[in-house]
Each structure stands twice: as structure tokens, then as C-alpha cells.
Amino acid sequence: MDQLDKKLLLVFEKELFIGLVSIGDIQRAIIKNQSLDSPVKSVLRGSIRYANTSMSIEEIREMMIQHRMEMLPVLDKDKNLVEVYFWEDIFRENEQEFDSFNIPVVIMAGGFGTRLRPLTNVLPKPLIPIGEKTMLEEIFDRFHRHGCTQFYISVNYKAELINFYLQSLNLPYSTDCFLEEKPLGTAGSLHLLKGKINETFFVSNCDIIIEDDYANILKYHQENKNEITLVAALKHFPIAYGTLETGVDGELLELKEKPELTFKINSGMYVLEPHLIDEIPENEFFHITHLIERVKQRGGKVGVFPVSEKSWKDIGEAHLLAKYFNAN
Image (cartoon, rainbow, N blue to C red; front, side, top):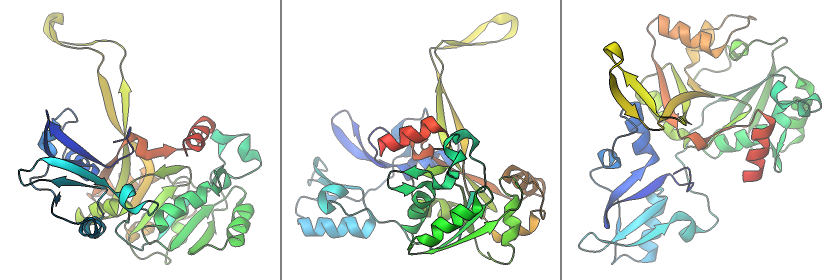
């Protein structure tokens, strides 16, 4: 999926088409702790939507719009695959639609951007350009396409410049900068929003971009009644050597040739319930990890929603910023 930049793949058994696997199917399997070594057939749904050869192109268009389908297979009466329609082929430049929601989004933009020096000696990290827009606007756009219209931006370093820049834009949504007068960690400034946010809200670092359906992240958070949901990116680390597992007296139990280790990495995006703002100490240095530990210690529920490795863009380092810029 990452290689093809697709969230839906056709699955074949030899030459026989047997179904579709979506990013959602894989995410649900990971959430259930199903091994990534599992056969793809084990996560296929029992039934899929498909078109038949008697349908007109207009009927196919309507079906794809109604169900927001990235691709639509066409099967004959014997269930053989005869054609595949892709969203971009049918709708050309129109973006695929997402489920809509409108909840507050908090962007943590108060850091000094030390990883991006010397660029951040002049510009604050949130205003570093990516193509024709700034980092901040790239994050805004991804939430706004889901329907979000209220953004709160935590600022400290070069706060006046960030605020001035945002006020100079004619944005189709509301942006409200709030000042942490001293560095307060990755969550400490959230106490300044007490009384302003009274519903579930997203929090995002200002130097990461998540390419995923945010509605699915919110749905997972709500359905599982989490107090906090962390968005985690899968990160793969290939081992260049064969690894050995041994038992008593050094007996060889298992030999794996150049295995790949996979971890879930904290991406820097979260969904929080509003009552957690009351649990953040006033004017104290406080990380989001401290808040997560508090919730876990009192028996609260913290969930993890996985996204693919290339769906997470960490652009807080100069070489990663250049890589992202060149790719887009």
C-alpha cells in the first residue's frame, strides 16, 4: 500500500480474484494484535461491494460516490474479475471524500525547532514552507477536508510572527493562538484551554503529517470509549544478520535469516477527552506521556490506532523536510 500509495488492494489466489483488502482491514487486525506475518486471506471480509458487467458507467460513478470507494472491481456472472475502476480515472482531479466531523484541533507549535536549525533561527518551525504552504497550513488543510473549523495553536518561540502570519491569511476557518510564556512540555500548555474546549478534540505536533482518514481515528476512539488515543506509525527495522534463539545449555531453538522487527512508534497525534484538561497542572512542565501515565494509573483507557509507516511524515529534521518536499 505504501509503495503504490493506495489504501485498497486487490487480492488473488494464483489467477483467481478472491477479494479486497483495505487499510481499515489491516488496522483492525493490528488493533486485535493479529501478527503481521498472518496470511492476507485471514483478514479479508466475507463480502465486498463490486459492480457487475451489466452496470452503466453512471451507475458505477454513483456507487463509488455513495460508498467513497477508492476502486471498484467489476465481476462477471461467474465472479471473475473483468475490470477495475479507480477513483482518479472516473473523477479525474476530484479528491476522494471523507466522513465529516467538526471538533476542535489543538496544534502544539511552541517548540524552538532545534532539529531544523539554522532555518529556525529565522523562521519558527510552524512557518517553515513545504511547497507553497507552511507546515501549519498543511496540517490545517488535512483536518479541514474532514470538516474541522476551529484550530487552537499553542505558541511560544517567535509567537508574534506566527500570530501575525495567521492573521494575514484569509483562511476559511478559525485560528486562535494561545501563549505559553515559558516552555511547558508537550502537554503543559493545554491547561490554558480550560473552559474553552468542552468536547472531544485532536492534538497534533506541528512537525508531523498523518496521511490517513482521521474520521476512522475518531471513530475508533469513540467506539472504544478511550480517554486518550495515540496514533501510532508502524516502523520496520530490518536486521542484516541471521538471528538465533537458544535454550538451556545453548541449544539452538530457532534460526531466523535477516528478520525484520516492527514497532509501533508514537506519531505525535492524539485524540483526547475534554475532562483531561482539568488533570493538567497549571503553569508546570508536563509532557503528554505524564498525562497518559496518570490516566493508566487510575484505570482509565488509553488506545492506540495504527497507521502505515509511510502515512506518517516526521518533518522536524532538515533531511526529512527536504525528502518530504522533494516527494511532493
